[in-house]
Amino acid sequence: GDLLVVESCEFQRSFLDFQPQCAAILNVEPDHFDCFADEKSLEDAFSDFANRVPSSGVIVVSGDSDAAMRCASRSLARLVTFGSRSDCEWQAANIRHTAEGVHFELHRGGRSLGQIELSQFGDHNVSNGLAACAVCSELGLSAAEIIASLRTYPGLRRRFEVIS
Image (cartoon, rainbow, N blue to C red; front, side):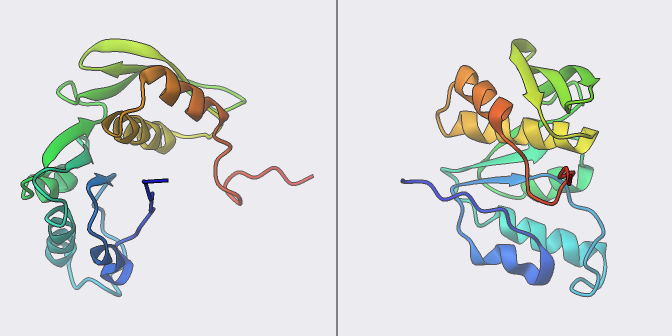
């Protein structure tokens, strides 16, 4: 197809090898200090990544992460926010943790788009799901297509994998 989706990491600044048209920044947290001397150098690397997205592109960014917002806001690309803060464009409401995963009502701009049912567990996967919804919407998928796709997403191998 015409799209390539890459999950990349800041380890050894490997994410700076890409020129994305659409990028998601889920968080900027102290990690990989074998590669970054301090938080400033980490934020500088994320800012460099954000600046690799052209002004015609979009950055989907967690509004819950002040550091991610600082880094993304240095880019000329359009920003789309997701998270729990009231000013985020994409939000999860009525979050329910079940034996099968996590379910929530998907909101965009304060309007309900439907129910998301993830077979993954944890609040971090609510955030990941919101980011995926925002990216997919930016790429032209409808809310119905996004909701149906996430319902069937099995998750990654080795993450909560049932071993019998």
